[in-house]
Image (tube, rainbow, N blue to C red; front, side, top):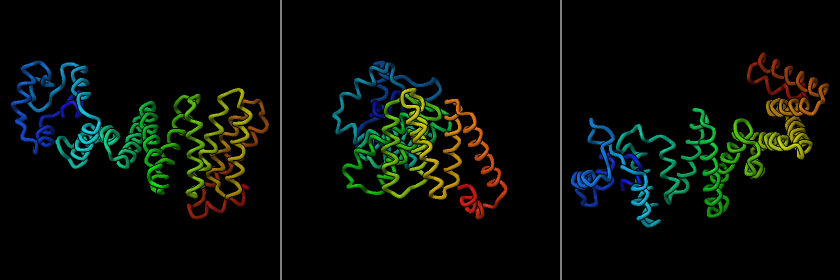
Length: 289
């Protein structure tokens, strides 16, 4: 059980988790300490321990059957979520770690999405990408068993959209999974009638492709299509956003006059929006189409 908790663990957590197991936790901890398997985390605390070697923890963990591991991770996640042990440990990343290794795949996707958002805000973009990827993978597996349940579709859409966004803005745009995420997310967004996310993913898809010289023209065409789609649906915010990407692509391609015209259009749109109350901003769509 200590190995499931991690390289470091707390005595109160073990006591709570083993309450029904008729295990003398204090005696067992003392014996493990005597053998050098675990150590106090500090000289001033009897509640926090760590494995002496990471390999020791790994061997203990691998000795469990897969079914046992999933069950134990689920118990740990539930304990942390309900305030067991140190409440400060119930952070999204740790909950996601345990739920992702449990049988509760729905809670796994939920907590992975929250953990990804937290990592993105820190910022820790590499971690965010890993968490969003896990949410996407587990969500797809859950979707295949959930007969297209809308809640799960939205989770997968959120995971793929977040993965694409972080890749484009902060990560490596050459990641082959990013285009697959953009296409999958847009497919789900269209199925769910989420025009905003569908438009955003179309823009991001175009931005991804322009990184590859051989697909630059294709990427520009996709981003231009995103602008046209947004204007047609009177989504001025998405049109302005996609137009910024288009202007950048024109600059890279040496089409400076088109870049200047596009940038001026975006500036006018942003200035008009900043001067109008929220309810009136939607009227801009007619002016800027």
